[in-house]
Image (cartoon, rainbow, N blue to C red; front, side):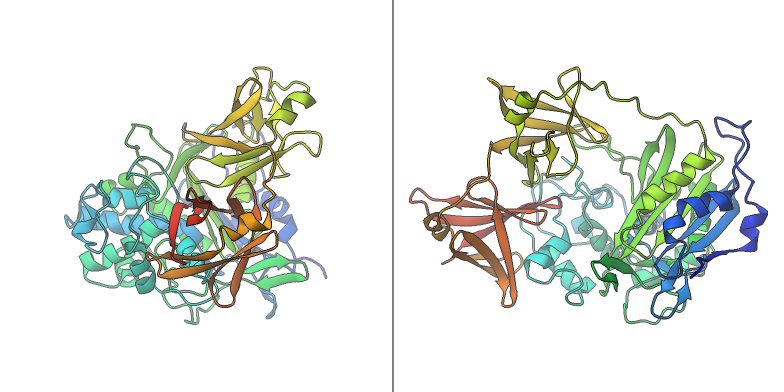
Length: 549
């Protein structure tokens, strides 16, 4: 079948109206329709899901275009007017709602969140509204908590009330408030309740009255009832071995995500941010980057990331919920270039698609210098192979040399550098050794922080049946009200949070296992009997369950 694409006539009329602020302004300006056709070629089809894209500059819409299908079963094309779900791009709208209340004099960002949310435990340091907005509160990720109960997202309907109760029942944090940045949706879910209690109206009503309606965002609403029929909504998909399958966010949890909208409305939103329609104080606060307690300024602001792409200042956020993937970015120094990409397929890579458009529109941007690599010393890297533990999240990284190079989890290769370090993707990492043996791996973050991974073992632990029997038993966590059954069968260990849900764990270093991206480890007493089970993940660092049987 011949591929088709969908374009508004207005887009073609302005397809060549590219900014004169580009570094290579004298060069021939690209045809935007041709640019996006190339960038989205993989999704320009009548038998795949796809993406919508919108581009504006200087307050003028240059192009909106659709590729692929909004509904594979109904053969409905994905148009620029198609409604898709935002993922975490929604966070800036929740942040704007909070800032409107601050502007009204009803809140102060640095006040204790317990003034509005008394259900929150006292954790030592005060969690402020600013901490909730910047992922510096230390709160555990709610989706990890429900998964540990045996109900991952998509397996039952989660609501604001039950998730709120779960979050506020947590007696411990990932870290002392403000010490680190750790992305989590929990803070933004609490902010929904903050907006409702302070404004006296439902969150969806407040944002409609104060944001969407005044700004003309007529196609934007919240998925506060996932059963509601939304005309024009694209279905979301994930690809599996036998083809595309529906992958919809069937819950009623919003504010961290769950915004239903179009690329046109997003371009309008970005333009209003540039014009500061909601007020200078509101808009400027959204892009004020957060500082940690030790003074390190991070890229995250209030529901927005303020960073750079190939030397361009970029104000952006990505989003991913079920099969939806999105990216919304603006580049103020490029005559307020604004790009919105919304896809209904999880593998599209919306951020990469956005940056491919930037590359075409702003030629001549600097690229990172090629790393000064040297020939791999096979004997030296062989000593670095083994199992490393992230000293913050407790997640595990396995380094091996089975393919002739040192590789992380069988994937990305460590390229040896002349200065003794290694290049891993875009990061320059360094091993600490003693007498030639690894002690740790230091990995820098984009914020200028450094994460230390401790060397734990050269090879995977191979537990005996008797060693696993010392672990088997019942473990209880009161914070989520769940008792875990841990069982040993030969050399295998399983964990079950409820009847019908069983996870099989793979051994890593001694008494530690992995289950997907999570680490599960056990603490034993002097007699060798396990007394506690710990879970660690990127968004919930150390979650402890005590042995009860």
